[in-house]
Figure 1 (tube, one colour):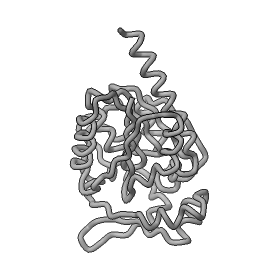
Figure 2: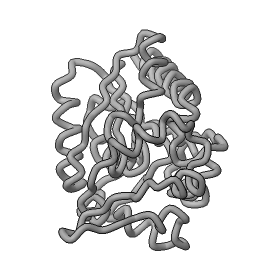
Figure 3: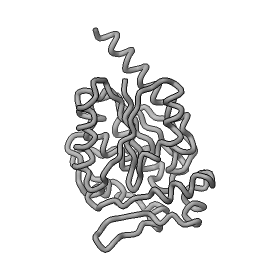
Figure 4: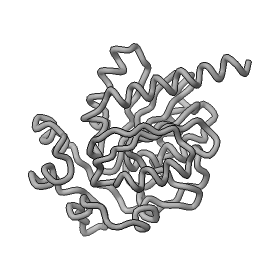
Length: 233
């Protein structure tokens, strides 16, 4: 079973820097994909191409916007389960923007900035860390701020065609102290998807501050998928 880790808006594979050593210590096969963040369509295409290159069954793990990517890419026949980590879970015809606009603005929206070309980035000032993610250790904050990238508007405005969570085993790890994607939204999406849920009291940076929870859910998913395969042969 190969684990594909999909980062969110503005992110890089650094999102999984605390998760990866735990996966390695358990002997799991994994890849952390670098999304281009130019459009949802392109990120889904890139993830699907990587799945095509693997001769293995796959579990997709998506953080934040990465959840939109795995929702579509998860329709690939090699994908056996999906795991959402404080992540978006769009339905058919739904966009990331369409989801958040149904709710009051998240506190983190105060730190979103737009470029002249219409792209988005987050201003991770000292105030941002204290207000939005106080649980992220000081030693990680500088690294996470320096690797932050630009996200084009199309990742938020392009819709999902067919949600894989409607047909495949799905888990959702909900960050209950999330000020970027509030827990209320995560719970609503998870309930709609019928996902198995785990709640943990962290900020949106759940993969950094609770990596063991992420790995525990991954291993639970692997175990259930293998059990199901053995009993359907």
